[in-house]
Amino acid sequence: MAEPVVDIQGLNYSPGGLPVLQDVDLRIARGDYLAVLGPNGGGKSTLLKLMLGLVRPDSGVIRVLGQRPGEAGGRIGYLPSTPWSPTPFPSPCSKPCAWARSSPDSGVCPAVTRKGTTKRPARP
Ligand SMILES: Nc1ncnc2c1ncn2[C@@H]1O[C@H](COP(=O)(O)OP(=O)(O)OP(=O)(O)O)[C@@H](O)[C@H]1O
Ligand SMILES: [Mg+2]
Image (cartoon, rainbow, N blue to C red):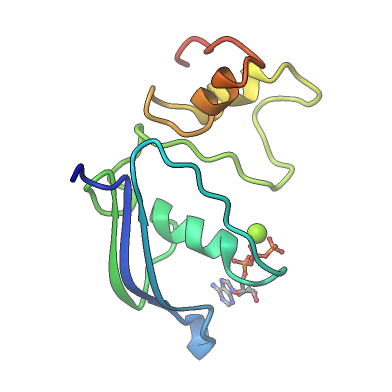
């Protein structure tokens, strides 16, 4: 079986003793689409931050493209939901995508491209 794009095992994250994520196992295969659903404060953004290496887990193993969180930079893209962006809005879809995407492996722009919304933008 091909190496998963994301492989998380036994992840625990409890900042200040508050359990945010407990015993999380998650494996995402190449080509998969995944929607993470849950209530406000359920830990969705925290899970992404852990994958990106922006915060460190208390225990567990996280691998992104076979590497530790933060080491796969340049091969994954992340478009945060916060209003901050180097690209002024409104703007064509291609601009924030080009910013978020740092390689052809990014999950952001290929999905948009396949929907026919825009052509794959040039690499920033
Ligand atoms: N470093 C931290 N210190 C304390 N609490 C934290 C920390 N990081 C996350 N939390 C808490 O963990 C919970 C999950 O937050 P998170 O932002 O991941 O939720 P979410 O599912 O993305 O919510 P939303 O749907 O509102 O975006 C929240 O209660 C948040 O306050
Ligand atoms: Mg969130």
